[in-house]
Image 1 (cartoon, helix red, strand yellow):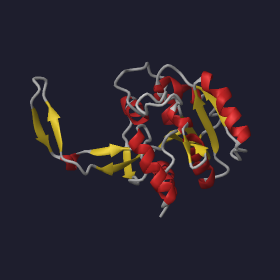
Image 2 (cartoon, rainbow, N blue to C red):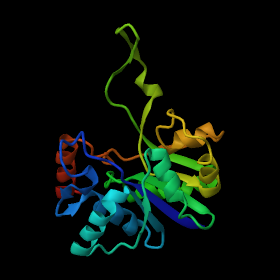
Image 3 (spheres, rainbow, N blue to C red):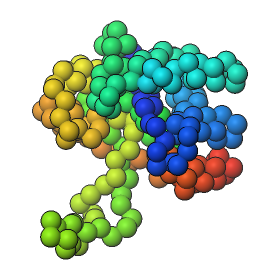
Image 4 (cartoon, one colour):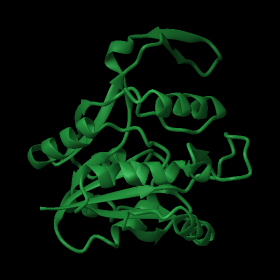
Length: 224
């Protein structure tokens, strides 16, 4: 079955406090986004890689690819006003049945093991996401400003790639957009499908703040 990877990169870098969108910030001489792209190319050179970028960022990205001799073949879809619309635009590049991973462009440290696990399980379950356990204590906030402790063992933090049978994901994205759609799993679940979870890797951070960038630099210096 054909394997697709949609890498969604629509961030504006506001939390990063940087003029450059976060996906383009240099990390060890290459933009974060290029590290992410190369991660999936190392995993499977035959997979169709589809990069979803805002139109206003595409010429800059192509210039970076030329200057840095990016070796990864990929298609470019235009981002939308919401992540939902961006993914929907990327799905227009899916031209035959298969399995589709949707991944955040600023998560360059997903492990090959996690990617393989997601794609292995999707053949059986149809919708698979990686998760990691919470390590901090958590509390549930009340509307009056008070809070109460919650059992963290009942909760997990969700990562990407989120991997789906193409028929399930394409059908789910025919729904009307809802603000409750926080990721692809929530879209698919709203369409009536059950989500299966696998263990993620803690290094698979989403680089959105200056502190995250420091962690990313440390991970590149100490990959093991």
